[in-house]
Image (cartoon, rainbow, N blue to C red; front, side, top):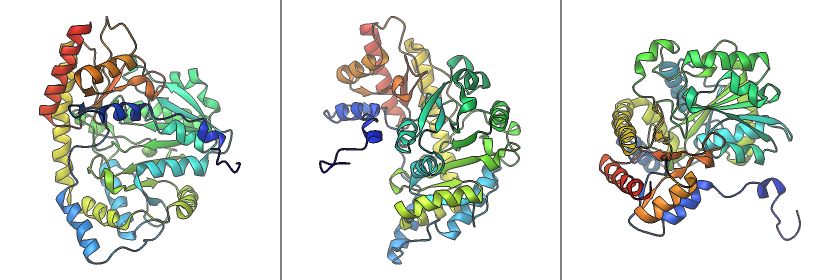
Length: 401
């Protein structure tokens, strides 16, 4: 570093967000329907908001324990056990963070040494790559393919050379594709990780948002809904960090509350970073999260039902328009292809769609290998807006293709 505040090389190596550029264009006009943001259009359940308000009225504005309030860690322990068959104790194995994003970042900083290789199943959430770079590691893209329903396969890991990696990053249900992986899908991945002594970071922020495959629940771990976590497979708990939070299923994005689950030693390492950088997650948000786990299950169910209705509508409409669309089964995104006959790349499609019809979507290539030729479309917005947005997209396609 010099006196001119020259950014570190690892910071300069990371370019601006490919999503942010589209948001900036959208902000220039007032007639845009944004299907680009990964944020629920619902507000947090009232009970959670009331808990936050009451905590402020009682003057609960001090730091909590670095690891988070013990009552909340106990509630998280019960919740992940009941919903996903994950067994983590509140004393040493749970860390409450400022959003799942902080949990992911802590994992990179705690477990990635300079020069380490981090295999990332792509297309993937755009923050993984920069997070690895900021930690001094190197990203190894592992391409998933639509013909595999965007599920990670051992063949993909072998093709990428992931047996030499130090850490594998998974995100299922997946952002941006909406793909999910069953317990049966995860078993060979777990075997690969065990064989090659690979640690795993499993981002499960969309775990509750798994839709009409609920009939596969018997395929998942005991006591679960439909989501299967790789940490429940034999020999995986001790090599996996699970990240989750309240932003998506509980519509609490602005409250910034997440958590990490893992073996005590690993969570201690993450807490060592957390306690110097964050001290503790926001206290008000922790009270809201505690109430969300205690009493807002029905609210979550209602939101998931709404997302599922929208999911079916959006997939159907893209197919009617002539844009092949993968049958997304989780999160709140679909990943359609640009139509045959479009004379350009997906980035150009997205930019012209925004400028000419006022619909904001995100080109798939910003999510890494395998995203080329696709668009990420969020359906975390109301059905009426979705109908209007799809009508505009249809008009755009009719004019240009």
